[in-house]
Length: 361
Ligand SMILES: Cc1cc2nc3c(=O)[nH]c(=O)nc-3n(C[C@H](O)[C@H](O)[C@H](O)COP(=O)(O)OP(=O)(O)OC[C@H]3O[C@@H](n4cnc5c(N)ncnc54)[C@H](O)[C@@H]3O)c2cc1C
Image 1: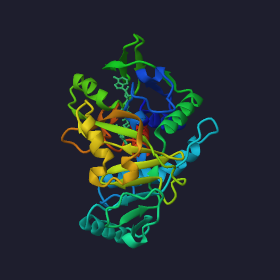
Image 2 (image 1 turned 45 degrees about the vertical axis):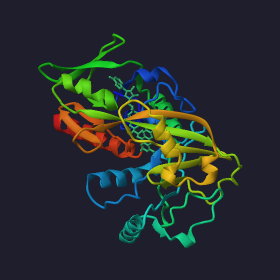
Image 3 (image 1 turned 180 degrees about the vertical axis):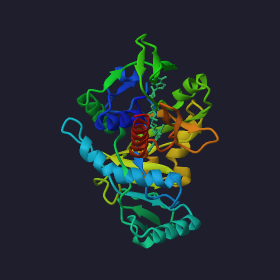
């Protein structure tokens, strides 16, 4: 259930493993757009696709393990999904500007404790001469060679193409209810669909972000999630950038990502706004980079903007990867890192299903 990046990536991996897969989501009625538009967006189509797996302050624990695993899997995902009809590649590197002396110190400690992770601290004197110049915090920066970005729309297009190739059944409908069914020899599930075509399946994987809570509630599982809205702006520079010389694929400044594209365009995002209503003051603050915006950024003109919702689990760490009962898996609530964590999520689901099949046989 759910054809955002998590559900589509998981469906593809399960089909690759030889399972017979059906994926349901009303958004499957539409093709994946080439550009984000401010309508009918799920979290995935609104996303920036930043993959920040190595530049992570921790070196142990579940969140770190999931990031590490995803970053290991991403190159082979891209290799398998890349196709002339849906070209895909990873854009690297990522540079994170230090906002204070303390942050610079933390970055230096991180780079020295992870010598083989492609992380390097760059002091202010050695910062590259970029055109246009970077916002300058004056405390140096951390370069992550292997972090960067994947275009989320191209990724979704490539995944959709692969689903069709694997004969995955695409059902453009909302699942309105999940019902347990059992006979003398097996337990299974019935999907009650809004299109009236109900479906019996052996196993359900719920990847429907904010849409997961209501369905689970009816089954007696409480997994509340809060919406956190994110806005993105597309800007055009008044002066033409020299092919963004000296710029990384992603520049992060105070938690805001600057992503150059084309000759003179830039995506900037994303805001973190509790709830479902976009606030124009939040985009203004973001555009000014909390006072660090260089003149060329202030002078740029707004070409477009969009927003989407992230699903943040309440009182539980993101993401929610759980087997709630036999044949019912939850892989949702990825909050700010759903694109990054998709390969590790799909692998977790695949391993659970294979384990369940061995146990039941
Ligand atoms: C502006 C913005 C920028 C972001 N930037 C990044 C980033 O740089 N890197 C990163 O890793 N993450 C980023 N994220 C977060 C990331 O987009 C999400 O974590 C991720 O998209 C979650 O994917 P998903 O497939 O779980 O959910 P979604 O993409 O929200 O998809 C859920 C799908 O479930 C469907 N659905 C809901 N209910 C039902 C139902 N009852 N039956 C059938 N289908 C249903 C919906 O129609 C929807 O298509 C960003 C998010 C936003 C909003």
